[in-house]
Length: 188
Image 1 (spheres, rainbow, N blue to C red):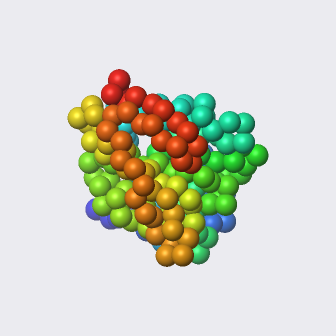
Image 2: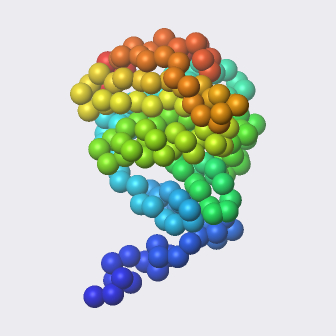
């Protein structure tokens, strides 16, 4: 049995930004690109997807006409080697709706929902990558499986290119930054 029988050839070679940009939406779904290599991301649970949708809807309602919120959206953090992430929720400038993948300058907030298998990536790796890309706000949602999500919020310290913790919410979010938003996640 060869590796070609297990995974397609493109999973064994670095992908450039130009190559990735030529792929179809179907080819890009369910993957991220780290150091130019394809990383397959597992399907999220229904509870995970519901929390992401609830957050995106709340951000859309609270952010006003200058910002949009979506789920399942590519973010280009770096061109060489290619670094594309697919955060669970993204808040981006509404005038950048047609720019794919999204660029850090157009992003206000990224949210990752920690799932089994993504703990280290969401808590440390992605957090550091988003900070290096100068994305102002980062939220991390924990304990979704228990029904009482814990939301950790962070703001970028531009001098150190690292996130500083701001607030922690248990179930009910009443945040003031990046804009006032209230949401009860206990209803999932």
